[in-house]
Amino acid sequence: MSAALEMVNLAAEKGVTGNLGSVGYGLAAIGPGIGVGIVFGNGTQALARQPEAAGLIRQNQILGFAFCEALALIGIVMGFIFRS
Image (cartoon, rainbow, N blue to C red):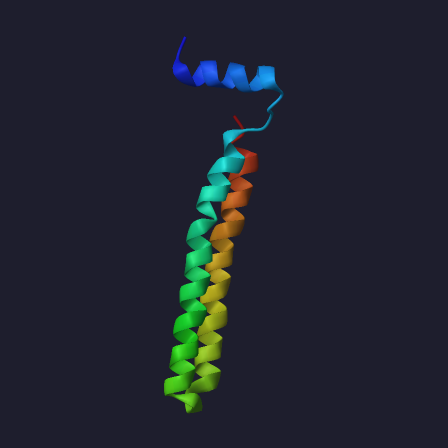
């Protein structure tokens, strides 16, 4: 019997339920979190350097935020699609 199967059986005996998709999503949420921080951090720096370009900078911030959050939503959906 493999070590992974033994761990699953031990967890089932102890009453732990769930799948690895939730752990995978937890790890995958780190990337979009860092991405959102980078988008807004750099956007704030850009606004401080060129306040006259506020409209364009804000538009690009919102677009970057949407892309980062789309990755997070795709990650949570994958946990439900590929159940173990």
